[in-house]
Image 1: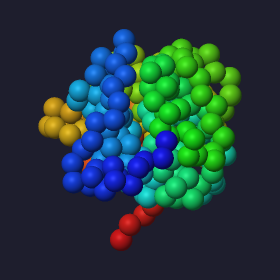
Image 2: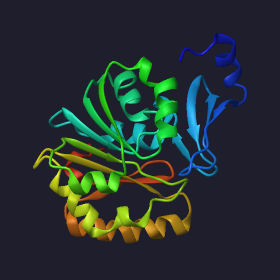
Image 3: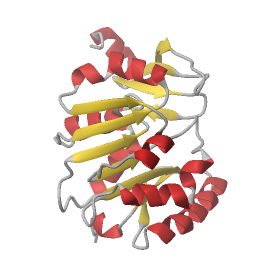
Image 4: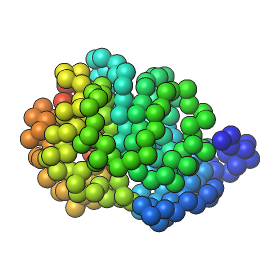
Length: 227
């Protein structure tokens, strides 16, 4: 949806509420306009924020694209910030499979973001946990971004689910990015505990500190060397 110029200017001064679409999964789900971008939020979390979705934006800047991915799996879609920023900010067109359980989220994405994108996106309205368990395809990049408000449901952090993610990740060149909240001391303690479980399945794994989140990655060789 095209943003009226006057609304875009106002959104740099204060947040403009655009539409609410509460659902059984997200009782407080709404789209607002901030800094000229559509933002999807719940009571305690930001689900999408175009190219300003910083946890993934800052992570993509740190990646060493040894082999550019072709097939990308998105677990949790929001308004489609990941394909939006990769296309608009990083000039990358990939083929996406996007899995999102909340049909109201998909309604909002179709209304506010998808018409602007050129990337091929196959959207599946399904439970990401069930999808991964039954999936027989392999993906060059998997972005795990499933939250209910600001919580990752516990079954997505079990070793059994991580093993399934590993199974559908393209061998050798596949990149897994797992978004984990790390804003408070308690969050970081929980993220550290999860990292130990994560490294049992991905021994070469690590994380990128992404502005209040840890982005766990299956192999640190995909992170650009600095200094």
